[in-house]
Amino acid sequence: MPHRTFISFIWPSALAMILFIALPIMSVGMQSMFISHEQVIETVENCGPFGCKTVEVVNPEATAQLRADEPLGRFNGLGTYTNRNHLAFDEIGLALAEATGPADFLGRVLNLPFYKALAFTLTYTFIVTPLVIILGFVIALAVNRIPGMFKGPTIFFSLLPMIVTPLIGSLVLFWMIDSKGIIGATLQLLFDNPDLSLKASTTLTWLTLIVYGIWHSAPFAFVVFYAGLQTVPQDTLESAMIDGASRWQRVRHVVIPHLMPLAVFVTLIQLMDNFRVFEPIIGFNAQANATSLSWIIYNDLRGSDGAMLFGSAAATSMLTIIGVCILLAPVVLRTWRANRRAA
Image (cartoon, rainbow, N blue to C red; front, side, top):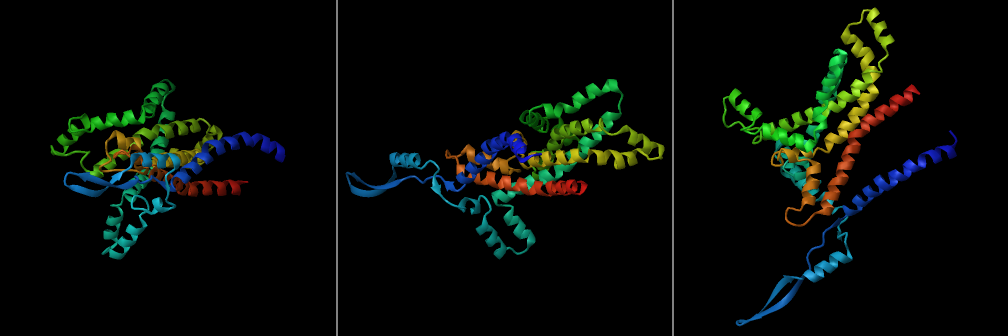
């Protein structure tokens, strides 16, 4: 393709990517270098019946003027990235120096808010992603084998978890696992433990969130794989059957290689989505036992003490973007090398 034709074809997409992706990311990166201004304090003399004394008070007018003159805040460089709420370099160094062993060091690190959230985020991502792909593939194979008159209703009910809004779905499951809900009460009856609570235990909370993530995301993988199954070459399958290949052998040597590009696509989408896990934590009210990087951003912007921490939220956002790029890099590189060998 001539260069001029290629540029004419690609420039609208390139312009849109610059305007709606690159510039916002650059803006967030710049905001992460700044922190909020401190309040302007002034010293005044306060006189009363028993004499005068000097006190320090906040000057609201000067504080408002300073924030209006410099809306980005005070320049902090990479200080936000290295403070205790993010990468915590000082705390990590102190833990390395004082820890009595690997377990003690790991315990100290996982008490830091960023690493605590990162631990759950990575656990959720690396468990939910492969199970979603496997379950979606199995469901697609099963639905593809049932008679045509049952396929429509089966596909509809299979898609229900994806149709329901994530926050609503998590709220419904949250009520079901309550001690008075159908799942919570049943588990208490089965284990003969009236104090058993899925919400009180960190491990059970993580398990509940992971099960919900698989339940909610599996329909997406199912739809993609089911569409791909309709394109599997029947001649190849019939040839394999004539050669005596079993069903498992046909799936392994014909179906899976044919669907591999779709598997890569589903993997990329799921890695990105799962690394940004957020709605289940809010829906399950699970922030006491499980937090994620996205929840940290939400918590900074929520401003529980009245002050929204834009710089902190921006720094966590940039670290999240870097994390997503690191997760996607092996899959993208492997696909690029495979395409290069095929070419």
